Image (cartoon, rainbow, N blue to C red):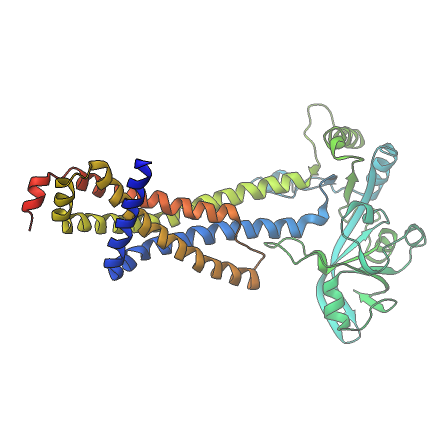
Amino acid sequence: MRPLLSVGESFHTALRALLANKARGALTTLGIIIGIVAVVTTMTAVNGLQNRFRESFSAVGSDVIYVSRMPWVVMDDFFLFRNRPNLDLHEARTLEGRLRGRALVNPTLDTRVDAKFRSETMEAVTVIGTTEKQSQLSTAQPQSGRFLMGFDVASKRNVCVIGSDLRDALFRGTDPLNKSLKLGRHEFRVIGVMEKQGGSFLGGPNFDRQVFIPITSYVKAFGGRRGHVDVNIAIKAPTQEAMADLEYVVIGEMRKLRQLRPTESDNFSINKLDTLVGTFNNVMGVVLLVGLLVTGISLFVGAVGVMNIMFVSVTERTREIGIRKAIGATRRSILLQFLFESSAICLLGGLTGIVLAAAVTALINATVMPASLSFPILAIAILVSLVVGVAAGVAPAFRGARLDPIESLRYE
């Protein structure tokens, strides 16, 4: 019970000292406020980028393997991949036959053309030639109308399913279903509109700016029958647990298709959402580390300011310390008093910084990307404030606790 009373007394004395020097306390907390705002904003920004990433690439599918000529992430070894042969439709159909009953295989072709409806034009729209299996590979589904069906592909029908951005930009409130849309030089009838999936992320694909057409119609309109256009092959595993085994099977079948000897490297790439997520998390980890190191400088400057003010406070109250020791105050109570005072200054600055950071986060969420303050971020901010307060107050507190009571009473 006695230690609790001592802590309460020390806290009360610290608050009185802060209230007695309001202007000095406010100026001292400024460095802490700036540091906490920077720390919280950095963490919420990284959290917002991760949310935006998950939102943008949710349609890729975590249980789908993609076979393509190039890897999705190329760092400094581009020239190792540039001379690889394209994947063609014959390879895709052969692979589909070999994996029949074990996995769902869907080849796709893509290009960029201008889309036009009456007088409205949207440039560089991604046109994807695919099959009815696309709807089973992706989490995105049509918001209105329907997706491609087997008879659309078999009959080479000039029909298309458009993204929400095309509906908004080209049709402007008009129902696009059964309207004729011009893709390049070719007319396609709109049979469906995909649900909104979110805009592009850091230069990545914009899934709302895509048009799906039957792959047979794509070959008829844009070419690609003889492998002049690179084919991407999506392979959906029956279960998430079967992904690892399926990957080895796909690699083996592709090596057989391409007649690669055991000593030859793969001349194709296996891409998965996990690889993309891993690369992104590594990049975000580096960004967060650099951001926290930079913002740590501001906290260090703030801590130095608090320490300086605490040394001044100890000097100003030397006689008070002498009186308290003369009537029985222990070194521990003196130490706790100054530690609580420095912690209270930093905690006050931290709470003010959190309020300002919440306003900045709301602005980011409204204008740039989804971002929000989470409980772990708030807890870290408060903990950092307390740690900085204790660290800044240790040296002045020990100095005050070690003062000789007789010499202190003589101090003027």
